[in-house]
Length: 264
Length: 264
DNA sequence: CGCAGAGTTGATACCAGTCAACAAAAGTGG
DNA sequence: CCACTTTTGTTGACTGGTATCAACTCTGCG
Image (cartoon, rainbow over all chains, first blue to last red; front, top):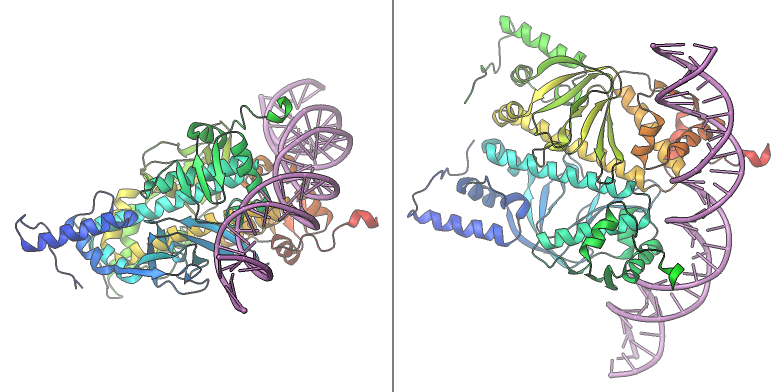
């Protein structure tokens, strides 16, 4: 019932402590954020968790971590690169459900039924850590703190899904796009990148399918934001020049100094 | 650490077994579906769970189970009536995130941060069972099966959220409305009602805010479905006349025998 | 009976989807 | 390394669906 050694509170000079520190740093550094970073995970939890995680594995661009219909085997944590999860609808076209940057969990969609309902595709060359779900669950059953943390992480995913809904309900395309850019830059910053200059890992088409817009509308939206001096775009390279304006556009008040065409 | 008596496998003639049977029926009958109904919950789990649940409590129409910003205290299970969860956006108007029929869990939105981000409003006279979250979590920590089940339920909520996204991405209003009606009738049937005749607990305005449409568009959509002979509408009373046509409209092929006006 | 809330229906304007042409970047093979 | 192809992104013209404004109906209720 307890295949993992219990190492609750070790004296600071215990030789095993060094390993734990190393592991902790490993998790912190490798952006295993959603599972390891937050407070509340003690040394023993971390050690057991590390024992569960299969180490980094490379993933080629375009490769899939799992397909729709696959049985839930593992959860994945992005390490490098980016992923998208897509749902192929009955009528053939694919709906983008989400993007996953380093440190974010992938595969939670199978929690409800035990089967994946969407596919996770690498948008770039990437790497992941693999977490066999059964083992994670059994460790969580032994470590209330980890269980709590797991619930919290899934709850956060629920929040993100609601944010996605919040974007789609916005009727103006400009608002959705601003909201999207704002969210992505925020997450890129959280994953350790710059929040003002970023290279989008996904195509305009992916963004369009994520926002429920036509590809061309996304492109026009980007151009318009550039005209207004909010961002600078060059293909997938985006610089955010006026973050507060972006935020303003995202939440409600559409284009305060708009109607430029009337003046010019 | 174990405030609840352990009653693992009781002999079938043990007097306590009767109580368990009563409780099990109680949960099954009262539509506590999402927490109690599915397989995998044994007698002891059920007993401990019942011990956690605060019994039925009436909720007046318009009353809120919690407000945005409230600390996560309890989860709720709808017993009678219906609820909506709404998110009040920065710019004032409210976005409907979901509807909750009897047997469905309410309050999971606070799992991520420990604070509710939306409000749960009773659409009709209603009643709920209240489940203090801390106690539920601590019981789950002792009962791996319950923990698993809890994860599954939350996973299913995630699926529903994705389905919501799936509706919003459909660009034609008609598709969204058909998808909505299809989903609601399905859930009403699951909660023990008829799947062909139902009384919607929510207003056109609520539906509109849920689907990201204008109120008038929803009304027109209902009328159009009636013209096409798919449903019969009279205010909130809806009869589904042609379920397969509804399904067809929901998934892709917009209005096969449409353009009736051209003929008439 | 009149009032208020909810729902329906009509006329109009506009945003965004569609079709299409073009430009730029990224592969691909000689 | 350069021509060629393919993919990806941008921009324009046009159309259509839906938001908006507004009038009207219906229901329940004091």
